[in-house]
Amino acid sequence: MDIHIEGLVKTYQSEGRTVRALDGIDLHIPANQIFTLLGPSGCGKTTLLRCIVGLETPDDGEIRIGDQVVWSGRKRIAVPPEKRGLGMVFQTYAIWPHMNVFDNVAYPLQVRGVRRTIIREKVHRALQFVQLEGLENRAATRLSGGQQQRVALARALVAEPKVILFDEPLSNLDAKLREETRKLLRRFLTELKITAVYVTHDRVEALALSDSIAVLNGGHIIERGNPQKIYFNADHRFVADFIGRANLVAATIQDQAPDATIVQSPLGVLRCQKRDFPAGTPVTLCIRPEFLRLSRPDPHGRADSSGSMTDTKSSNVIEGRLETLDFVGEVYEAEVRVGDQLLLARVDPGVPVAAGDAVRFMLAPEHGLLVME
Ligand code: ATP
Image (cartoon, rainbow, N blue to C red):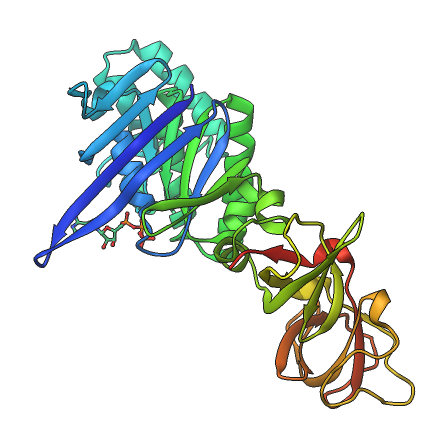
């Protein structure tokens, strides 16, 4: 089931002033997708989720779930939460501490008066899916955090909603369990063909889990797209910066080549990803640290202190000096001085360089992303 949101506005009164938590949101969430609302704290993610589920009353706009209008200011429609047919999984596990695993999961079916044999079968299937079979009689309080969250997932699933809303459901789990549960979640949402609206401020979670991501800021949707589009091809500086670590450098469009856009920048003249900006346009050049590829160190140790490019202009070489080199596990993280700029780069272990060395980085034009300010 898909979700249509049009012109949604929600304000709060707080300490004598009006906070516009949602400032005219237009959004289509396609059926059977994992759709993530991503953005910094306070951008309006939870408010949007709560408006969809019916726990907040918007000021204006319309929300449609499938063919049903569940809220409309103009049409004076407000379907109560329990009649919207949605499941919800919160950050806190919200399972009943006085019940065992079976009764927790069975609860939504019991309140609907479903027959006992059917309940048993459905609970068994849901527990199998979240890999908790065999723990039916365990008291909910005697489960680990990850297991409790999986009970909450099974309870949301057993009711077989067409849409499940998730509000940072993994944020209380440790890193390893978070990753495991994320994979499990992706598998079962995809297999069961459920529309999932997922709120997080964790960019890795958003990239790994989602079919589509909408990035919010200040009550607006800044940009939406699949994870690859958002990571590699963002249209906005805010999005490029928020979704991953990035070197952001002010640049000016110099020329257009058939397959690249050429910019002037403090790193030199560089061929970048093709973008349709006229010559003279000020832009931000965004280079992710992993795309600065270290080529052989200069055997003569040369790299002038201004970092300006030499005869290598056309081959997209950036020359600088390594200021720091930190081992962070699978790679070294390097800070590279190029004139006034300090760039973050990743260097493979085993490459014989040290702080103070002159270095050269290659930049493939497709990894020089140009975004508007
Ligand atoms: P977080 O990631 O921190 O949970 P969020 O993106 O989910 O943030 P919201 O909780 O939707 O953000 O809040 C959006 C804005 O509305 C914030 O400025 C917040 O302070 C404000 N807000 C939210 N709920 C209320 C409320 N009940 N009363 C007043 N202001 C509120």
